[in-house]
Length: 222
Image (cartoon, rainbow, N blue to C red):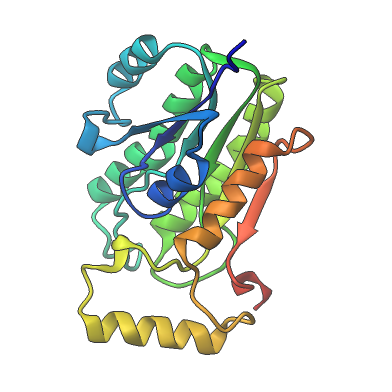
């Protein structure tokens, strides 16, 4: 008798951490589905998400690594509409995915969301990212209770060397990463492969729910 393949969905899996996680999860016993704006799924559009899961059908594990480009700057200077747009994608998009995924998750299934170290590390000029990430970390605990026995967790990455920093010049990117290496206890910048292991822990550990998994090189230590 052939073994039923484990079905994974990675929302935001076309690049960065999501793409690396997809590579780590692929084997002969799994099928990994990738969704993002590049593939036609806009998580800020609830109808789009609803119809996506309707077409996809039963699923074992759903992971949201999709982010948003949140504006930085002082509260006095940030464009409020831009800030709301960032919330619409990362926060509300994650909630909408969880809402509609829950109807299709199989027994033993899980949902894993993504926050970020700014949820709990105070850095000036980052109030939008801070608020989004903190909101996700608070809500994931509520979802873990409401959706039980579906497990719901959130991974909180620190600085990770992904395509998100390609907008910087090579000199700027190099300086940013060098400063981080000097500051972080692990003396290195995170790689997508490092962070992907945290998502695998959330997916594979049946005794873990409502957890915030920090994988930030010790950035929160001070």
